[in-house]
Amino acid sequence: MSVESYGNVVNGTEDHEGSEYVLKSPATGDTIATVVDGGVKKIREAIDAAQDAFYGIWSKTSLHDRKILLQKLSDRIQERSNEYAMLESLSTGKTLRQSTLMDIPLGIEHISYFANETEFSLERKIEHPEFPDTHGIIQNVPMGVVGAITPWNVPFLMAVWKAAPALLAGNTLVIKPSSSTPITTIEMAKDALSVGFPPGVLNVVCGKGETAGEELAKSEKIRMLSFTGSTETGRHISSVAGVKKLTLELGGKSPNIVFEDADLERASMGVIFGIYLNSGQLCESGSRLLVQSSIKEKFLVTLRKKLDEMKAGNPMEMETDVSAITTRSQKLKIEKLVTEGLQEGSNLYYSKNIDGLVPSLGFYYPPTILDNVNMDMKIGNEEIFGPVLSAIEFKNENEAVEIANRSSYGLAAGVWTKDRNKAMRVASSIESGTVWINEYHLLSAAAPRGGFKNSGVGRELGLEGILEYTQTRHIFVGSESGEQDQVAYGLVLAKQS
Ligand code: NAD
Picture 1 (cartoon, rainbow, N blue to C red):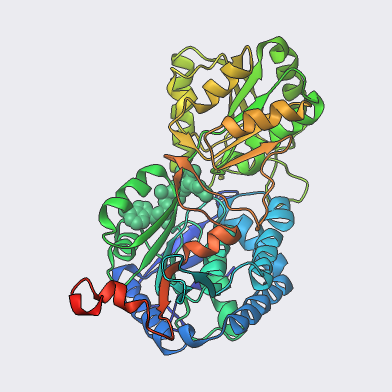
Picture 2: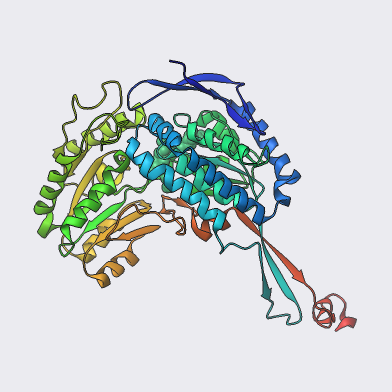
């Protein structure tokens, strides 16, 4: 069977210059494509192309026209959505059902959201209270060339979340996707060209983090870098990026807090969805279950029964529930952290038997629950990025909030209770960028998302997310009469006052 060969999309053409590598599916072990690592050379070419496109055409294109192109892109990907879903699942190992029903349709919807967004405006007028006869114009000006670096867990959505608001705001882009999962990002760039985005506006270059990624992070021609990935890489990028705007969407160890007065059936589904969607490889996965002592045993039994019903199999079959682990190194990391967690004194409460049910050449880790975890353990603190739920019990509301916040991360949290006042009280006390009340993982393109503490800096999505891709220019419009000038100018020429 011949496999597709993917190049880099630079200045309007797909270019195969560089070293080719083979991409295998983590779900099945099958070869799915070859990809060209463009390395530092292609990154530099892409940055130059993006700069030319920014000054040559894109910064002169109207907001209205940019919106029209974004909607065309959304429509084009919609026409090919099944193909995108297949490619996304093959390269990440996530279930085809999830790509078909969530990752791809959500990405399409989010491009369309930015195409039709009405809150963002290019400028607004202000008064200057000190100088009543003058006024100011505040402009939201694009940054210029934006670099975007994305991870492997939800590659299409991550590329959309960066490209759509950045393009809307008038920037040109160079995206470096994770070398394990670049295909749908390349497809998006090709589709952007096919619907009329000018060459050089959206470039995609594949390559390793320490070469291609680092070049993008360091480049002085890049005015802003939008990074999503691990906290460790984010920290490194901050140290090499120099003077440029940075947004960092990093890791998490999110608490899902279940009170005794919750609808336990609904909460159990929310907790399972919170940690086992995408086999726990989501930055905001609810990897810490904070459960009130009085209901802990009963609640864990409910979770166990539901996990028994999850279907393990080939993720490329629509009825399979369990996703693969996207990289071998991530699987080893999960195994290591669980082993250490057990050595620290936690209990293996549940491990689903998936042996013989999943493709033998893929990477898998069984849905797991560890009980008796506490916040002095590494397993209670470190991001696991896998299908492992750590159960921690609490006695009362204060203790729940205290445990939830005793983390260096602050990305997301869930609160499960029928008491709306308590829910709001707890949600407002949690140090994280998103808190769900009686829900988990639900995403709206209208709502900004991002991290407190080590989970990141800046926001993605929503109006706040668009504004991240802009810088502010203040134009001070002087008075017609010039009367006020005397007050200021008199400071250096006394005769004036
Ligand atoms: P990673 O940090 O290893 O890699 C992310 C990206 O950075 C990749 O494209 C990689 O090639 C690149 N990179 C690596 N080293 C680099 C360097 N020195 N310079 C420039 N670029 C470099 O992360 P990952 O393993 O791909 O993804 C998983 C991590 O991403 C998890 O920690 C997860 O929590 C986080 N994540 C966060 C969010 C969020 O919105 N907060 C969303 C998804 C994933």
